[in-house]
Length: 563
Image (cartoon, rainbow, N blue to C red; front, top):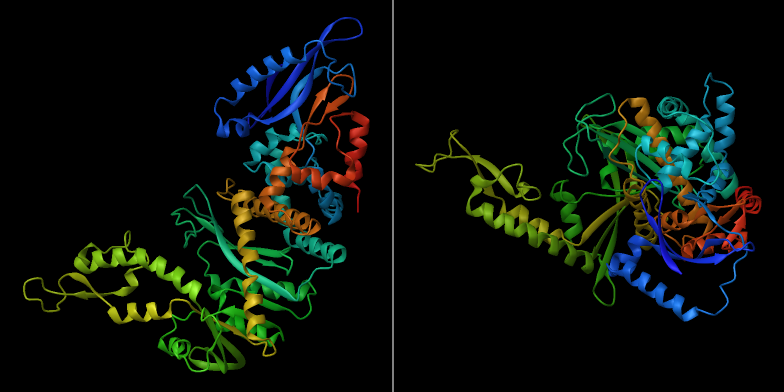
């Protein structure tokens, strides 16, 4: 026996196999794979000499087994025909792709437009690539031969052209997805979560969508804003793109108006963070007879709200003294141009957590070092080095010789009162709601579920590598984000079907581990997969080392068409 290392066509990973030689019925010397020993990177992660050790072990094992019968295999005539590895894990995504009506929608749309290439096939490739091996459109095209089922013949330029069509169908397609998901999975939209984030580009060029704004990653290039609604189970409902300089506060209402008119959600409770808390948003939600649970800024809204939060009267403290809360009933006046346009009856929930106070004190310790430096020499303060502390310094002008305040040179003085006020507010939070029937703990529990949308943005940016964006025209940008939205939706549905047992990253690793290698006479070898994939595929009887092509194809088709 000996060790063989096989590298995938895209050079992305290498597999290590234990191989043995044998003689066939005619006495010819052949080779066959005995065992898949795993990924080369994984094997050498803890032991750089793992490959060398395996070769020594294989040699010694051959000596030990000399004279014994060879290991049994399913077929006696196996011989490697190709070193190419083909992924078949994507069939679990394709099953969901069909189940929520994407294939039928795209085929129906194609029948109405003049298009010479298969839009459904291209969308599949872009979505599955985004799910499994995210990268550029060019990389997706180059890897289209890495799947067990072949894609139809289309060119790279066809992929870019298809993005224009995807941009055109975005609203109609996402609505169709929602309706099918609601029909198939019975969406729970009693609570819907909203948030907005941005994605950056490597290019400094701008367009109608690509604009310079406040980047979450502190990038100086153009960005694009995305507002996203998801349901109670974390399944995306819809999204909208906005120019990069759009204020977060103005993104919620346009999407909310659309889903209220088109998505038939019924009465909903919208949960969002303080970045989306504006009088106009709350007024619109309340007038729609819907509810909101939205956090409230307590530091930037003047001392009025801070005084309410810090007033210890009516707080209820738990037995350990680590948590306390109080509810304040109030009439929230919504103003426009200084005039009251409506009044909403609200509950203002104030609460304090010792854990959060300690966390914020820890963060503040890092700021204190910078503050001490700038107190000693305020002239050092500038935009590049003052993040998080500049709000505690008041800008003044003074004459260095006399000390009198005159308009000669800029300087800063430390605002001790504001600093001490902020320290006092550490650990405190405020949430407002117009649902007066909720208990304080129901409000907190509902609000904390907002983390699922934060995780959705993390998945889109990290696991699906939605940014940086490598396409440039606005329509191509829109098409790109539609594929990201669909990819996120497929993973969330897969999580739902597996009772949220696995993270997206775990599912991604599992689906990528499902690869097969073609052997002679229509036989495929199925190397070992992750335990997660074994769990996913358990009911489909894929626990074989070798399968003939027709049998393998039938089993994968069973997955595709399983309801």
